[in-house]
Length: 167
Image 1 (cartoon, rainbow, N blue to C red):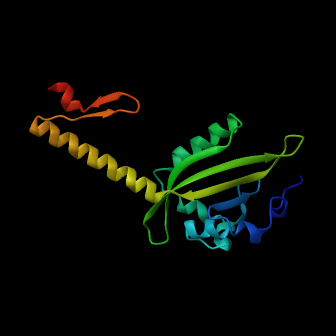
Image 2 (image 1 turned 90 degrees about the vertical axis):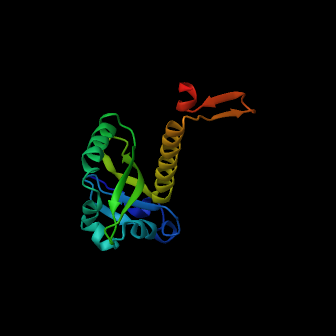
């Protein structure tokens, strides 16, 4: 079976300049290439990644969902797109977005998997902070028996808070 090498998709030196983590895996899932950004995001060296130590980074609570997404993507013959947590070297978790494409030969044989990993921790933290603030505002409005509304003049859409509906 013919496998692609990393040289079929680009120069490793050039791929190290990309600010998003990139990886190449054999058909069975064994990593054979990761770029510098992948290593920075994961906290692993290329050697550790190639020894499959990257699987230990996946947050245990996310593992069943990831396995299910991989199964679904394979059955539906589509790329894998998933957001999940990884445990960093300092045991703090990071949120990452992974997209992986399966590359096949003309006869349909899987040549390997090429994908990207992006650290989305800051975005996730901002979303959580916004959600917490919205929940606090709703609680204060309920306790104070006040509501709020907003009018977007460009779309002429008016939105009311839950408490405004109750009043």
